[in-house]
Length: 124
Image (cartoon, rainbow, N blue to C red; front, side, top):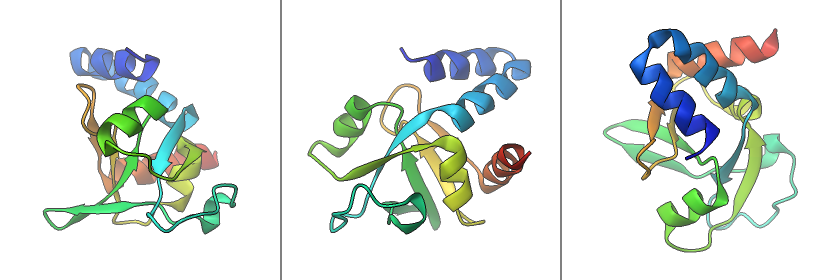
């Protein structure tokens, strides 16, 4: 169980803990899968092409808090970039959703309004 998992669990028990969860989201490093043809893993965050999945008409950026969780979800080696949450917020488009730790017991969807708020917090 990661620190992010514990914070999510705490926020589900007490909404007052949600701020701590968001703070961890901003300051944690995430493994973000890239499109299959992406080869330059040392590229600047602005130039990488993350894998975006569509589900029910919504586009999702996938963020995993460990390489093991990414591998468990992908079930194969996939190219990825490591990016802090505030960096992911900076490159997210206004309509993009996030799927954090997809496939785990501690998966969470973040809505565009939440991501916009995170971006505003990281700009302060």
